[in-house]
Image (cartoon, rainbow, N blue to C red):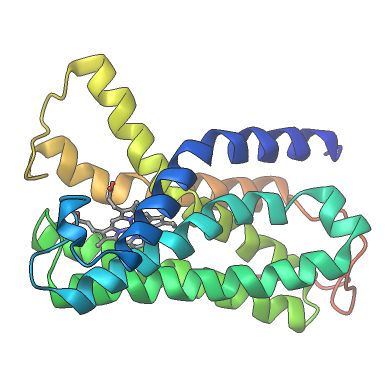
Length: 231
Ligand code: HEM
């Protein structure tokens, strides 16, 4: 694949997430600085200082992750500025861990608005995001180019997953005026959404990676470049 195709795709993706990145970063910073975060948004809980701080920190880190992951994968960054790519990789790993731990902390301390079903799927999402970030960095250090690439693809999908979740709602409400969805997030649409914002996309990516043996074309790391595709 010519680098221009992934470059345009990644830039379009990054630009489209900007509104959500700005919203998340702003609410997160305000939540961290405010004495009364419940005045800012319904997502914050009365008398839950630790859970609210945890959620606010996860919003700031999540914003960095959402915009950072597609930009980090730009072919020009990987090829021309490997040092920036390396530093960006460690930064995104930290962002993924803070996002995941912050979200998991909030789930453990107060639970989500959608109840147990949403708790479980959001927790799975949080664990997967940290796993993907850890593996992406690990295989980069190991100089296993193919596995690094595959985990990076998974990480990008998970990183923009929170934005996809909101986009599904925007599109669904525009088309159906919110059929099978309610304020308590217990409608059929809500219950499907808790996994539909990342699982199908991960599945499609797995099929694509396996069928077409999509590989990173760029120069870095080659210790295992002669090995067959794994993971
Ligand atoms: C990947 C980047 C992420 C971003 C940018 C992000 C951003 C946000 C934002 C802005 C909110 C506030 C809700 C709203 O106003 O719409 C929120 C809520 C929440 N997020 Fe995330 N998030 C991300 C990933 C995650 C992950 C990985 C988890 C799982 C551990 C998670 C768990 C939660 C939970 C539990 C809530 C509260 C839901 C509720 O009860 O209302 N988020 N997130």
